[in-house]
Length: 559
Image (cartoon, rainbow, N blue to C red; front, side, top):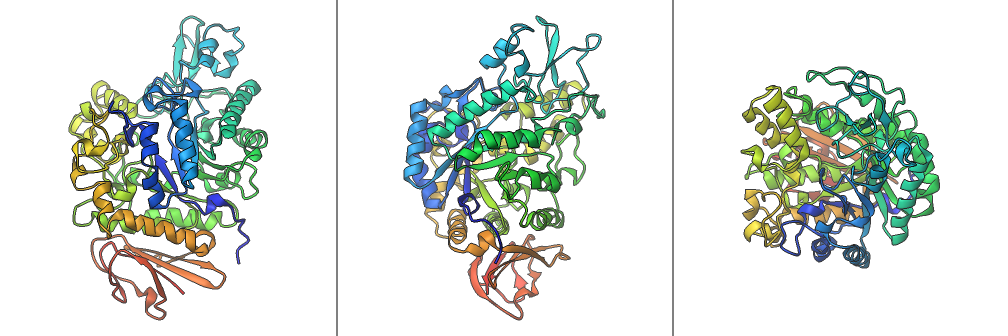
């Protein structure tokens, strides 16, 4: 028997909705809150416990809603606060909780706090943001923003520079200022009192900066790396413990921090079992593994594909080392990570469904809270980009300008090939509901083009096929709800020498769950059930051949 504390968010499966691309109810080509409400019964049928909404706040939309101009208003594209309240009430009535996106590292430059902050050096809001003097007309340091170019923007009126680790329209908040922190906490209480059930915290590992603001190591494009001075910064755990004391501990919430650059040792603080900070964090080690095979052309941009043994070593390590100390989040893709069946699986028509089910099994049988990104349960794939004109994401547009047009580091063809592999727009194409025009997403002109394969891959087709990816996800979710060993059992790796099979056991109260997944398109020997066949739990073939795993076969038993 483990000593694991039983709480609802450990037993839940979470579904991420990217509102702009989920369902458009009014024909303007943009997904909205009423579209979400209309499709909540679909998510209830899947068995989802929690919905995580990417930002729906008022925003000029420089970074698809992650640049917030009013935390207590709804973006007009998405509807009204009344629409939100109706969506929240409907989700609760259907037995689903709703988690909001907390974007508290930065705001929009159109937020009233920043408008006031830049109005004068003497403004009471000046210290809500990070302002510094430059050096001989140059920025305070050499840091590069995540979206390319300098991380500082000059303000002529006050003759100072403000920090923006992302877009220049996303100035970073100054968490060193107690008034800034209290303003954020007050906003969080407002939403919690409205009845939301938790927070996914955007780039939360970056809220504490090294106050020396030193230059970073210079990269090939001439800018410095801010990473060592910002990620897991000096006061980040102090700030989160304060947030917990002031806000989180007063409500029954799920909290997950997006923590790029987080180490296992850091995660033991962020997601400590004592509940002093967050429920769990998103780590990026496994999704970043593919970025160096082969080496990327520039920044994160490459065409590599991580080997299964490399992925296995990373996720097995997280499973083993957080046991009893912190809680894992489990995910393959999200709004920033390309489609899993294209990235880690095999999206060729012959193998797409089998591969999608195998990948789902491999993840959902692990210890932690699983996250499903919209369309993942259909086996949706990356799309092909034939022109920069098809892209909408600021990250893609900026790296194209810098690496293709300005510095000539890569050719247009090379950059587009990279986009096919890792561009964020791969997962932002509209949800594929049916085979009607624009995949049933909108009756208008969609804000970003639908993946052309929607006629074959869509929810209506999946719901009509008992052997679809959708119903396989439904079975995986039902198993997690009915088998405590899947939630609370300890994790034990198997066959770690295999180049083809990812296998492990889960153990709880004398029971053993055995999981094996073939990551190749060839049959592979697998001796795990030679002595003890066990009782079949789930698999993606109708029959299992002893001693063998068929191509992309997943097979699970319990004894």
